[in-house]
Length: 77
Image (cartoon, helix red, strand yellow):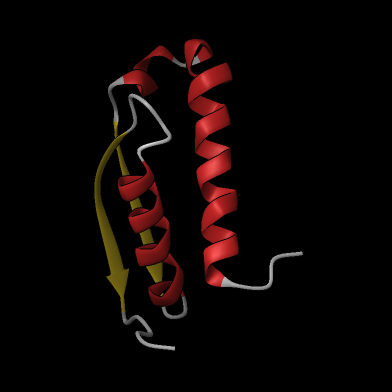
């Protein structure tokens, strides 16, 4: 169970790390494809945390994090 935004971001980071390390060879177009995170409403709380974690940790090599989008998002705590 996830109890915080930072914990959820860690899980997203682990997912992409494992995907790019073990499975991206099955989907060769994903090696260079840009990755975008989009969400609406409460995702305004999560999407920036996910993008920040992936961009700042740089633990997912070869991931092309190209952008984020939030529609009608909740910001703040």
